[in-house]
Length: 203
Image (cartoon, rainbow, N blue to C red; front, side, top):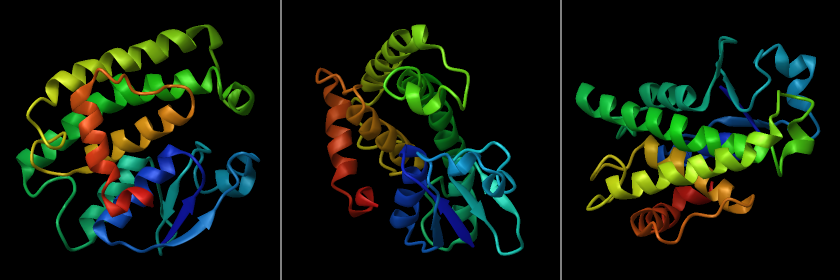
């Protein structure tokens, strides 16, 4: 297999996931800032032109970070970061969906439409006038999640899962691009430090 890697929180999610699971895959670095992911060679692998993707030995290419992680989880022995049974997997997918739609997407687009505008304005449809509202939406939903985290160690309770990796990578990214976490969200702040302390978080 071959992992097409780049800067940014999306590839980081897969790297942290692989580090947590002890998975090693050959890697190729793609110049996202230079637009290599929008050139014909990469588009032939991932028609969306997004990073990252995973190329299997038979030439099949899998994109979308949570899908890549779930594939790697399925084919690798060891403790699953999605769940050991149908109920646990459903719980993880539920929280992934909530975090992705309500926090990660508005956070990421808030960046793309403001601080990241020069990089993205010729790649996707950008709506600069929506940036502030998107950033506020992400923060409001984080405050909601803070309430849900009361008494919990991880997003899925006592289980460290893909949900923790996914949210951690994007909150760390947000903090680096002008969207710091609200210090009043004590549960999220404590959770963030717990994830950060794991060796895999440095991947």
